[in-house]
Length: 524
Image 1 (cartoon, rainbow, N blue to C red):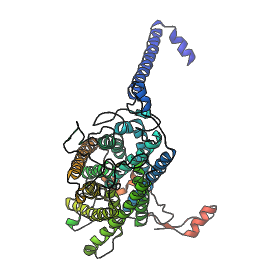
Image 2: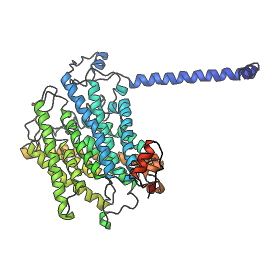
Image 3: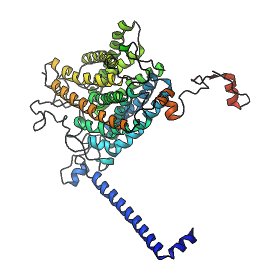
């Protein structure tokens, strides 16, 4: 090779060509490096709300005081919310068919990894970066972060991790209605859209600094005459309704599973393959909600608020589970496990928005209504012939709407805004039933309608575009074969131990595992 190179270099035209190629390579490298530098300068611009960013612009910086106890509290609750992924994996796998268990599990794991990287790169910036009323544009790749976030006394990275767990929850919710027929490439594409763009950009409207729903009702902003903003303490709308309406758009775009017969046609929802792990998954989610709701105080020093939120969360879940199971008993004449799980999950979703501002009695009522709303949601989808195997839209979409509106009805007026050292009582949240008038309810209706409509419209467009690529739904042959084999080459339950491939005489299995002296004898 070296001799051939020397021979070619003796020729003038070959030498000329060689140096042209070398020059082009170096020029290309220079262009790439320049682009990287320019992009880094753009996305790494100072963040207007951080101490570092304000100092860079010559503006008086917000004093940064990091509270160790608040930071620890937020981290612990972030870990609880993250553990909800185990609950989702169990719940969705249990309600799904056996032949798609691996697909469900891998989907949840892949979504978590993907969401983490996207939220770090630009999702957090879109949602919590300083920008305008529609989108944030600072903190890309967590550049130029201050000691805390916006003077909340919590370490910036602890706050990021807490919000990442929320983003991951929304991303996982969306997959529930799409189980059993979504191609894995299609799942990657829509998960990218959800975690990187839809959730963070819409979330900025409510939770981001200067979001148009967060500032609604303030002087000089949208509907200043209303006098109150849209409120969502821990995410009935931002996390659950957004996730629920994305899942609805996905279920419609995909169509029902092969052979799915709906109630109005004399059929009904096929049973899950393992209600044991589904029930355990539901309870794990309940446990994780103690990070979701109390953690949203962002303060361990608000001990009264934390206790109230945790109690309200528990009571709403209990009421939701009870009303759902009693509501369906007359029609089934059976005590249904599946609806009890989705019932208490509906109660949890509903109380997520108002949990800080309502009483225990209000929480029971909110949860009880949510349990019925979930059943209505299931009936609605059956009537419309929309296949939602896990009940993602009834639980997260419909119960999320109810919980968001319930704040405007049941807020007692006794509680203010959660703060770093305790509640700020200069602003008290009061609903219609407690003499507060209808302004907060109107704000909740506007915010919920705007978020749900925007989510459904954008998600429908995303699924339409993905469907055009041919990657959204697996082939008919692949669905019949089962996603586990078709997409992943294996199943969750090994045939040696009683899976669909048959079972093996246990003596033969033990012998083969201990040294292979006996040949396994398989019986169908």
